[in-house]
Image (cartoon, rainbow, N blue to C red; front, side, top):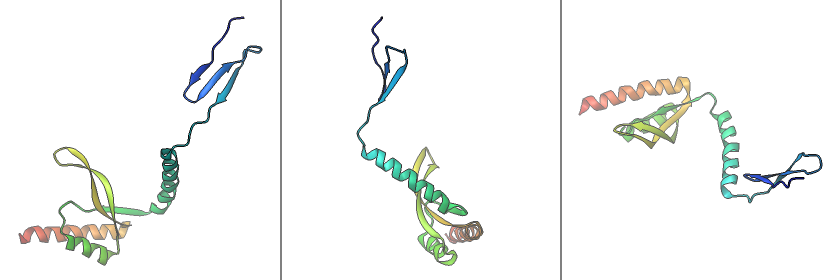
Length: 126
């Protein structure tokens, strides 16, 4: 009988069984890493967050918007201010942290109209 050597793939070793020519699988344990725990935590939070975000929309505030307009939006429409990483293409495509205001669709649409009107008034004043 020919001698066979074990075949290794990642953390699994396949050992050919010499009597029945079947493969016997041995799974090696690997050390738990912090990255593994963070990944599991993020996946768990992501599922909860997806349920919580259902029905909510983000109004992205353009960079350079005067702070008083943002304060007015938050107070008048009771939107939740947050930061989100968003890809912005100005000269090159960079990922930036931008302010977003989160709320229901109707409220975000009304806030968007208010933001547009306020920005037009701000630009025409200069």
